[in-house]
Image (cartoon, rainbow, N blue to C red; front, side, top):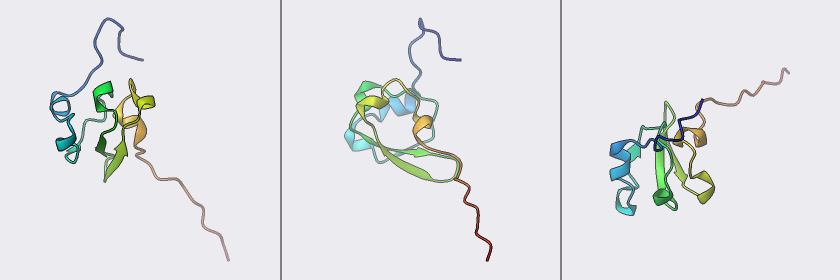
Length: 82
């Protein structure tokens, strides 16, 4: 279920302060934050539960959550039997 239209999109206060090019190298753990247009062009490090994954924010990502662009699970690859 999405957030109500009358509410503003959620963004963590600590992340909002760091939406400048000089602070883009600091990692963020807020996967629930919505991507704002001010973040377009920045390269953010987003936590996936184990590692920090770097993602460059593109205009198509505006309005989505940060967690949507960082996978938390590995793809299963079956080993071949010899």
